[in-house]
Image 1 (cartoon, rainbow, N blue to C red):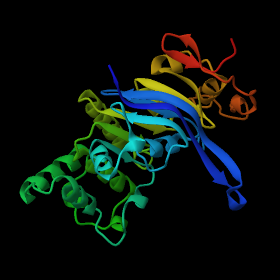
Image 2: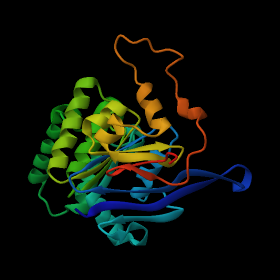
Image 3: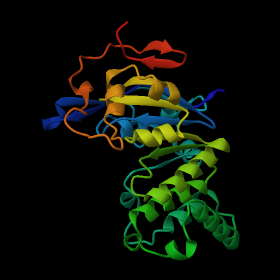
Length: 293
């Protein structure tokens, strides 16, 4: 199956310090793809570059070097018209929903913006039916969320409104960046099951999280990111069942277990691990890790 989204040796460098004299490499030579009907989890601690990758895929942040392709086309070459069409098929839902809303307007204005941009000829009754269906798909009662201002809704409700907004488009690819971080446990399962249904219908999903259990629950393939570098990747069963990089093992060891005391002994050994080798090597079928051979 051909890739829907491909990242080819992508690097993102920020200028920092006085007058931009310093350089911070947030993402370093990252290569992977996401196919239709597949969930790929990108897992790492805060500051590892996960969200930066999501923003680059959606062209919210430019790539310093390398290329990102959607259906074989380099997205950096998209002009305004082609970029608008790209956003019809590729969307993102990010961790902080509050930043996506203008507090002056009602929260469901995001649906009107979609209609004006992509479905101007759909009649009002049909559009309302579509909105209600998308809200119900993410376990929201239209009567409780429509015509409300952002401050009248919870973070979880605002997050699900953004997922509902994405469902109104001709969606093929979704960047889901910590999208269930503000949801309670029961609603998390609803949203995860929704993502599973979308995957079954052919949607490609990049699922960005720091929660290993969520990644294990939903993803077909997993990439472990540390300090902007992919240190291990492969089928989720292989990465979780036979971790090869010290950082992957330390992440798994740091997960609290019932009836097990979680103390100083359960720390991240990879913080003190030596510099990783410069290249990923094959350690099993489709399983790559930065380990010494």
